Image (cartoon, rainbow, N blue to C red; front, side, top):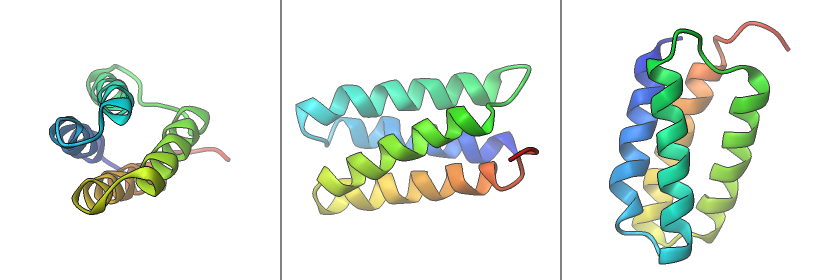
Length: 89
């Protein structure tokens, strides 16, 4: 579990936000910002925070078009990889 996973997910979502439809652009940017804060913070996110992000990414992936969906899916994989090392639940 490394914070680099969160940084990679944040970077992907930030870059894909411009290609997304306007309604999704803001959501993608918001999630990217959260992931960046988690990556840079003193403490990492807990399972609940990560679960909310994963649910949002599921929704965005389902609504997105091809290239955007692929990048959202890849970012989601980074979040899942990070979460697999979080203690608890």
